[in-house]
Image (tube, rainbow, N blue to C red; front, side, top):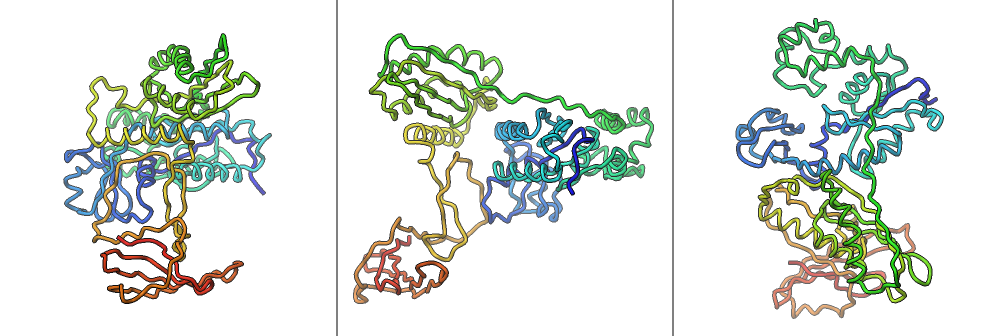
Length: 490
């Protein structure tokens, strides 16, 4: 029997160790090195957070990176990018707004959000199932694990969510208070220095902290700790929701039927320029165009154009629009157009007056702009990336997935040089190999199985080194009784 929402007033969704999860998301699935987040990209950086492997080696937050690398030579340092965190934060707010009318970020904890759930029991009678759907959405769309706590006070749900990795439902204010009082202070994202001082006084839990006089906390400890005690004693459950970025809309009716791409681009530039000036005031850039064209003979054409990153650079935006318009048949002409401009916060590099990009960052940005041009001209499903799959059949050992953007390479563990197998889209039929022309033959390596399918598989794989220095990858299909070339080895 699911718990009801009729008495619950507030919920907190928390992404545990938010920057660390984002950093691990971009690493290969088989990455096994210890990881530490640092505050900047140089040798004088300090450790912000560590994973379990790094903690076992004696690395902890607050330690200098120079000291950490001595303790753990294999330590992999990652500096979180503020613009990436901000972009994911905006997407998380949009995801959570589909579950609650009011979503408020927790200012002290990156990746934590308050949700107003009052009155939601009319739509969602089962609280636990509602929370599981929320977790599923966040994991499927952002690959982020989350904890969710439903309760009655801002501090109660926040403290519980930051100290768990599951779904917690408080049935009453007393059960919430009892649980929160036993939470260790070490799980509340406090600075290391006040924690050590409190441990000397025998203060280890939230309950221990609440019993200390407020005047003593304010005189002996930081303002951060005093603010925490005040919030722990408050029963406030208000959620101050933030609105997701709303699109800017521009539209115009043309005086005559237009089919020339350059003239259409000039019209779009003219009507969009005031909007770009307005967005600049709020440090916003264009992340997406939703274009709608009204044809002269009836009907509409809709296209979506995404930029490599939020930008206000007119030549880049007009270039993407021009490429998209060239891909549309405009022989009939258009009589009206409308554009929804989806905003996003500009990256810090574009907000800075003194831009000092590294050469690699310039190359990365240029590459992502090139990918955006390819998508605009040929469609969003034309840029793909191969992902490995668990299969012993070579042609089924990978699949193609949509590729979003290029990122900085992450150093992997030191490895010896490996051979690269280049697989053909479809195997080519070949004649029987003649051993007189072969230098060396490796094989056979038998692949057999899939008896449950309509056509079973039984193949003998060979790698043959020819006299011209090329290593050919071939196989003999025992079912079809035919030799095939699968690819090359380099």
